[in-house]
Image 1: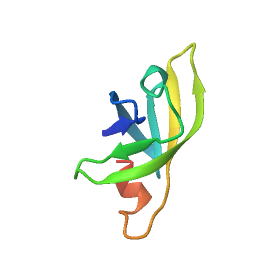
Image 2 (image 1 turned 90 degrees about the vertical axis):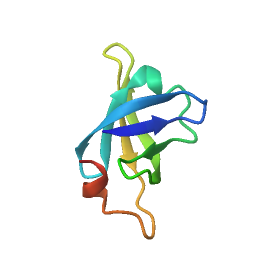
Image 3 (image 1 turned 180 degrees about the vertical axis):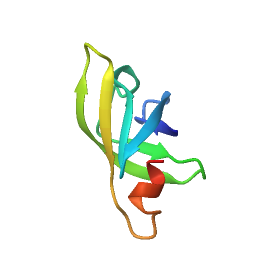
Image 4 (image 1 turned 180 degrees about the horizontal axis):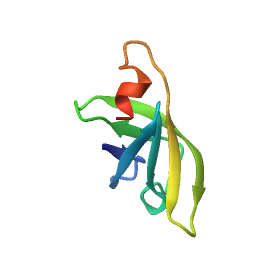
Length: 77
């Protein structure tokens, strides 16, 4: 489980699906220009919106790899 932050001041919960892929409610990602996730260790990682379906309220995020970050498979679990 991770916390998803879209920069609006509201947060959502996301679930790690596979290496660096996070599934979260679409309504929790209103803004997609400054997405980040916070992992169980409190580390913040940038993310990008891969896709969403408003009808089923699902959004898929991809965690961006960065120098010194945990391996993406560790973030998504």
